[in-house]
Length: 166
Image (tube, rainbow, N blue to C red; front, top):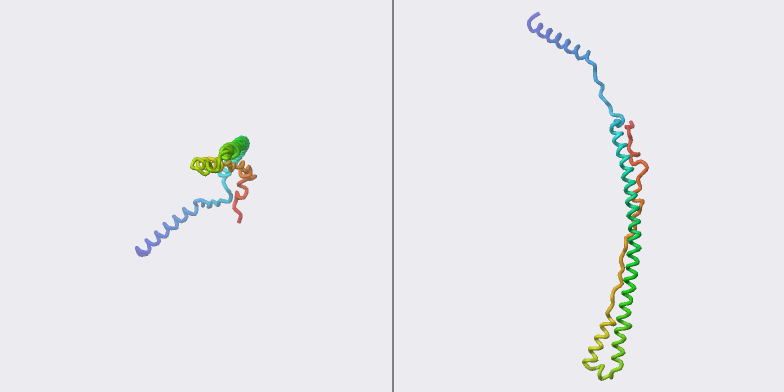
């Protein structure tokens, strides 16, 4: 054998020895994720418990809000009605009492007086009461919240699969 052949032979032998060492090592199997880990499932379950609690708190808050709105609404409607009755009384007073008193006074005067500057001033004065009005209050009172907006689904995670399907 010449030197080159010996070198190739030794190199091949060394390579075979090295390959033998690798074949004796145990091969690791590749891990295939087929389902969510228990830790991830436990995390989901803990979130679900918290969701149930927060939904319950939200439902309670909406109920309390609606009860408060109902009481406030009733008080507001009563106040609006009372106020509007007084607005009607004020409007009636301006026309039926004040303007009528001025017109009665004017009616007791002569036509010449009514056409005079003083008579015209009384006319304007009476007209100002006849045209004066207070507006009734009209407020759009919001309704109570619809409690169905906080309905929690039976299981919000039910559409999510825990494991993969092939």
